[in-house]
Image (cartoon, rainbow over all chains, first blue to last red; front, side, top):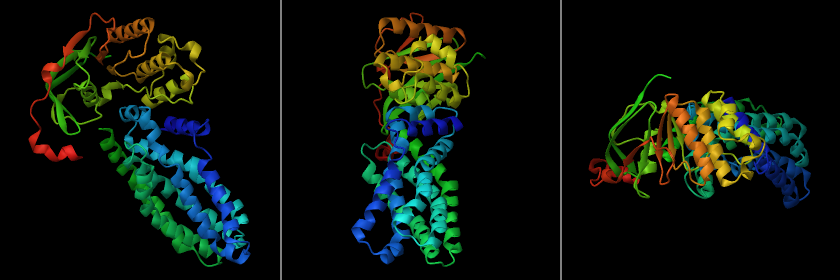
Amino acid sequence: MIALLTRDLRLAMRAGGGFGLGLSFFLIVVVLVPFGVGPETALLSKIAPGVLWVAALLACLLSLDRIFALDFEDGSLDLLATSPLPLEGVAAVKALAHWLTTGLPLVLAAPVLGLLMSLPASGFGPIVLSLLFGTPALSVIGAFGAALTVGIKRGGLLLSLLVLPLYMPTLIFGAEVARRGAEGQDYMTPLLMLAGISAATLALLPFASATVLRVNLR
Amino acid sequence: MIAMELRVDNLTVARGGLPVLEGVSFALTAGRALVLRGPNGCGKTTLLRTIAGLQPAPVGEISLDREAMAYGAHADGLKATLTVEENLTFWAQAFGTDQVEAAIASFNLDELRTRTAGTLSAGQKRRLGLARLMVTGRPVWILDEPTVSLDAWSVKLFADVVREHLKAGGMALLATHIDLGLEEADELELEPFKAVSSLGDSFDEAFL
């Protein structure tokens, strides 16, 4: 399992691995929004939490189809399925690798980009916290979607359509944490809901992903 | 390695819910190799995938568990941006063995050790893909067209490795059109097993 994780991380770091794809997309969206909205600081700081969350979600979405598709194309997925590693573990490790290469950089970049969006000072902690607790759910749900569409050529569109509705609860509670934080309100309730969603998806979806992969490999 | 036997009994294999081969039976004992022959599309790959445990068999028995099989497909499962050694080391770790050096030596990959797999020629990739079987440490090798794009010298290298594996009590099940230089291997013609009936009761399966 650790071997698979290190391999996936190494692959992501090498040329064409897609590390930084999500991060640069996140950066581009958040840099462009102030230009599109105009230089009103009050408006920007009001929409900052929402924009950061939507941008993070789309950045996650961008690299989802790579999770299993590349391994499927070169035959590694067949070989992984016949290896002693349980497929549930493979699905979980793949989601973890996706989070480490996409979700975690977003969490770390969020405060810097919050500055660009003139996020109020009280909002920095909550946006980082909400992304930290929310992005794992995005990766795990995304891995499930990627497993569903693994045999399909150019399955990206279908994947986005399948995954977006599943992302809604995470987005709603994540953005709520960030918004309440920015407005100086108590954000404990939505944060707990968000953590609950992440914990539940983490516990259940790797099993669903593995089942779907088995069907798709037939 | 304990003496074991792979016994396939009255196996039906299906592709897309429709049976392609029916009543396939054979036995493979430790130290033997079996070559499957048949025209393109007759179901060789489907049969191998079924025996490797990648798809369920609608009818029939396979005596050995999938844990005993090492499957080598058309695609080598190599990562283009990893080096030869990294590719092999990963699979060795995944299968919990430490035979990377032996595999590198057997397939003469020592000079290519630090090259990334993406820069290898088709034949070199194939050799690396076959070296992967060695690091699995599993007794039954299931090989689908193992010698495609190999030159005569590499085919001989491959035959030697298979022979070595058989001598150690392993088994090999191969599907191929090309002469492998494995004269001692048994052959099984798949044409007579071609499915004629449909599965009938599991009609819905065709739409899954």
